[in-house]
Amino acid sequence: MKVNKAVGVRLAMVAAAAVLLTAPGVASAAGPLISDFMEGWKDETKIGLPILLLLIGGLGVLFGAWGIISAIQTKKQNQPLTWQLFAIVGGAAAVVGPIFILAMSGSLTSGQGNGSNQFDDLGIKY
Image (tube, rainbow, N blue to C red; front, side, top):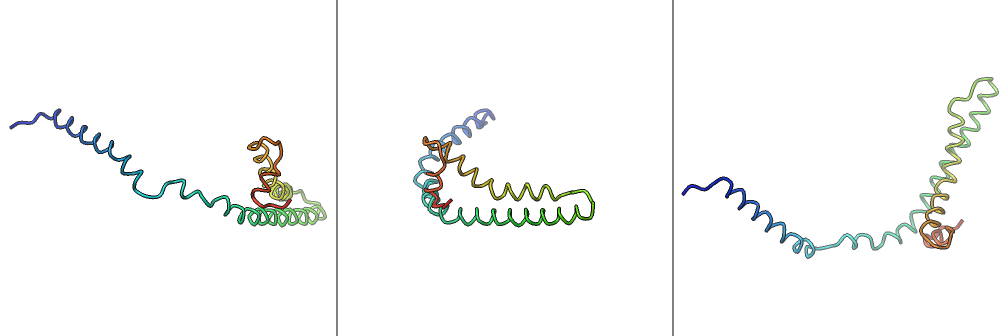
C-alpha cells in the first residue's frame, strides 16, 4: 500500500493538534501555580527593602564623601576636577533616589496622592 506524503503530513498535524489540546488540562492539574510562588513576597519585601535602602544610602554617603574629599584635595593642587563631581552627584542620588522612587510609586498606585501608605505597608520608617 502506497501512502501519499500529503496524507502523512496531515495525520501528523492532527496528532500534534490532539496532543496540544490535551496539554492545558494536564498542565493545570500538574502542580503548583505561579500565584503560589508569589504569596509571601510582600512579607519578605518588608524585611529586605529597608536593609537594601540602608545599604544603597550608605554607599551613596561613602561615594559622596570620597568625592568631596578628593575634590578639595584636587582643587588645593590647582588641578581640574575629573570624576569627583560624578561621585558627589551619584552619592546624593543614591541616598535620595530609592526613597523618591518608592514615594512616587506609592503616589501613582494609591489614590491618596502620597507615598506614606506604600512606606507603611513595607514597614519603612521615614
